[in-house]
Image (cartoon, rainbow, N blue to C red; front, top):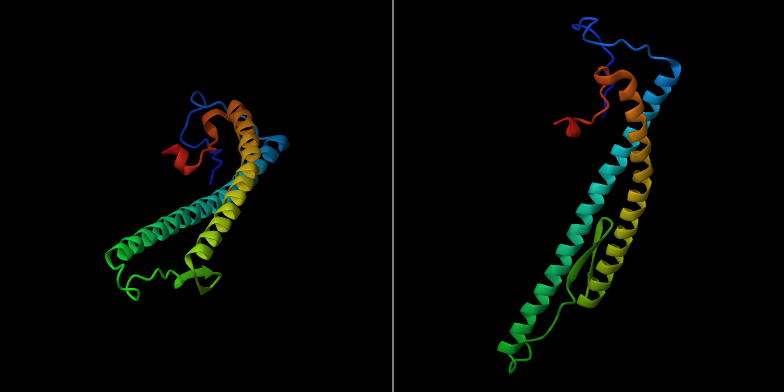
Amino acid sequence: MASVNMSFAGKSSSETKEAEVIFDDQKKINRFAQLNGKEEELDFILKGLKVQLDNIEEANNELMLADDGLDELEDDFTSDETTGTRDLSNIHFRIGESFIAVNKDDAEQLLESKKKELELRLKELERQIAPMKEEMSIIKAQLYAKFGNNINLDNEEEAE
């Protein structure tokens, strides 16, 4: 989270230009902090959704690999119907806190619908975050113009 540092301790008056914090400045600082907190919250959710999307991609890849493995088994055991059967009906798909057994086609459909849902949520979050970042950038520029190095509005990640 961005921190606001208005301390002048340890600096001589020739090193710092003291600027008085007026009510309008305080409103800008508060607005920046509010936007920053909300942006960090949405960014945390966004990262979680991206992890979920990666997991769905990985599950899709695993389904394809399982299907390919069964194709090879069928080629090896064409004379034995019991060994070479193509049974992907025991795929466990998580819905909420429970798992249901589905076949490969249903699993692919469920994964695809979940992927589309997550992509829509990602786009919506990104749409919400963009104007926040823009407004924060404007406020940051105004406050740095007035207070210079006497104020710190950078995130810890940005500062490093």
